Amino acid sequence: MDVTDEMQHELVREFGYSDEAVQLLRRAPQLYPDDPEFRTTQVYVRNNIANIGNLTEGIQAPDCPLVPLEPSMFTAIIGNTNTTSPALVSLRSLCKSGRPLVLLGGSYTCPLYRYISHVLNDIYIRYKSQVDFYMIQIREAHASDVWPIGNIVDVKEHRTLSDRLAAAREMVKETQL
Image 1: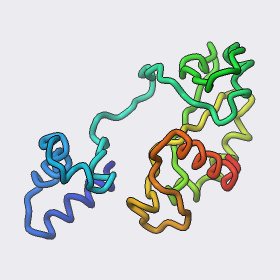
Image 2: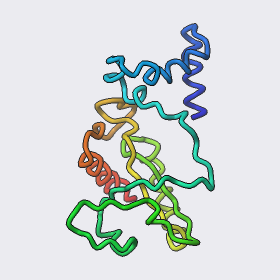
Image 3: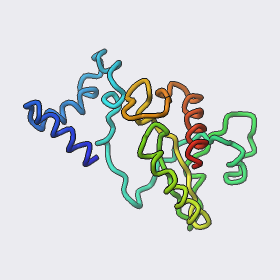
Image 4: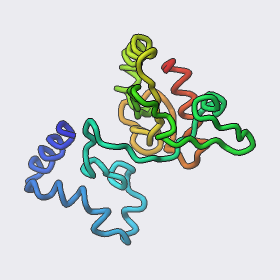
């Protein structure tokens, strides 16, 4: 957030506005929720959640439902024998007493994420016997139909769960995560 924050402040100053303009621009979708302009604006502006709050070590994660790429992987972990419906796994069901859990959020269209994927693989290989690792496919950072900055992959903004799962499968295939 610090780099993004500084860039946003420099940009508004360059155009002669005060620093308060940054805060106003960030909050515009919340200040004017009925304005149709914000329904069609860039996903970055529509969903600017950067200042909702930062995570810190030791805070409890919400027990949110996760959709695994391969539901069969989780059958033994959480004791779920229901194979007739799409598997939902609660985040807390993945936690094991005395064993650290690392959640990694990333998107295939993030150039930095793709660039460091080999490092993430090295960390996983080194610590997988001591730590549980799970990757969560988040909103595409630079979807090709929304904000394709410097992108060499063509993944559109997810509209459905199937879209998100397809992007996650492609990311796993290409980055070997």
